[in-house]
Image 1 (tube, rainbow, N blue to C red):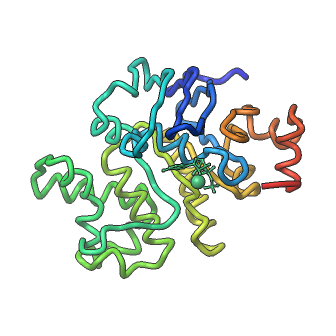
Image 2 (image 1 turned 90 degrees about the horizontal axis):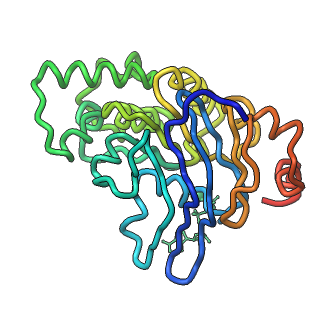
Image 3 (image 1 turned 30 degrees about the vertical axis):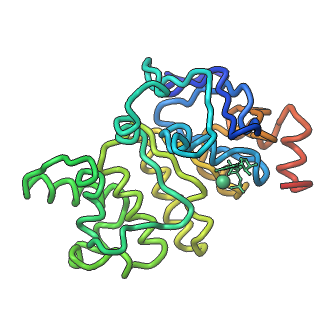
Length: 254
Ligand SMILES: Nc1ncnc2c1ncn2[C@@H]1O[C@H](COP(=O)(O)OP(=O)(O)OP(=O)(O)O)[C@@H](O)[C@H]1O
Ligand SMILES: [Mg+2]
């Protein structure tokens, strides 16, 4: 598979939790300004894999990881996790705006948590830019000081995307970002992801085969902690090489 430059390269990446070998010898590169979908049956390690990319697994008791993971040319596994999380943002399955904070403060939450001081003017600029990038500005611009939890599920998820984008990440990780949303809110987020890839590299876990085929450029298929197949999405969907991939895509399991 020939692509443009990679931004994140995993080599021989392994992860154990106590005696369980959860991710096995993963070799994969993610490419700049592409959307990569990660698919595979429940429990195969998709969330664990993307959580490794912003060091969210560090705190799991009994976790051990090995191998290499380079962000540009730096080993992400040896970087300060706080710095990693600024460069690699994450949005989860359930929208999780901070319930006590306004929309405005939610967007700036990453700065507050990192103790970064901003002028009022800088704050206003970041809030506006991030909400515009997340296609939420027009809907909330007159209510920035209301609580984020007043928004609909789809709006809350776009607020979480704005919160991640506010830190100017190089990579945005999305773990089943639409599985808690209705079809209309899902379509809006899918449109947004296609727009965002001009600005940020996106790695997205999804169980939704239609979604992967609509919006991803590349698709990785994981099975029992192993990377079975990785290719352009079109190839994975029309000309997959492994029977496991085919069986999954035709819903024989998963
Ligand atoms: N904190 C943990 N402690 C022990 N085992 C864990 C922990 N987190 C995940 N696992 C195990 O790691 C494996 C992979 O889990 P993971 O959540 O990454 O799967 P997934 O592919 O995201 O599944 P799903 O599609 O259901 O979200 C599972 O067997 C799970 O039981
Ligand atoms: Mg998961």
